[in-house]
Length: 184
Image (cartoon, rainbow, N blue to C red; front, side, top):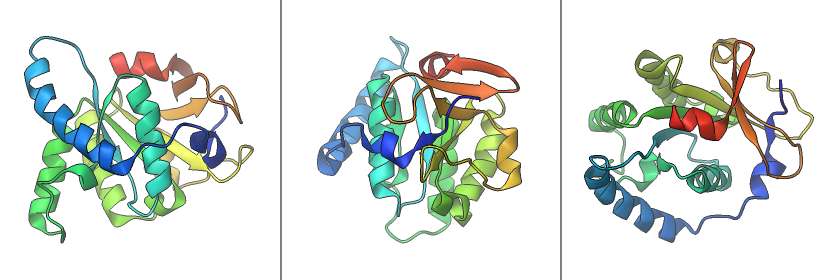
């Protein structure tokens, strides 16, 4: 298995301006509806813990650089400010609508009720081909030791500890580049 992605590695990516990111997301969602008819573009539902703001922005940047449209709920103006049943309904629809599902598996996300609920729904809709876990470790040489059920999913890894480069999706002894997996 390649190396897990450390917070340091992810932070080496250029940070995304939040306001610009929100505006671009809104514009992209509008354009995506039209472009889907004419071209190939992968969209990813990124499950995450809201308290991991910096890590989320860096993951969005990484995926965006690979030419992917990334959905995160806090950029969705149709999600109510206070969670309720309509929040869950909207999230379910977005998990189905996006081709891929990635859990940004920080310690906080693994302990989140919402992230686990999203992962369960994502599992039902996307397993095994279109779902992956991106474990974010505190240190480059850390091992990911999350909940045991996470071990059944494809995992996103890196070829390097401290510099950006090639990322992979590994599952059952097979490995493809993240970019290739996103296009499948």
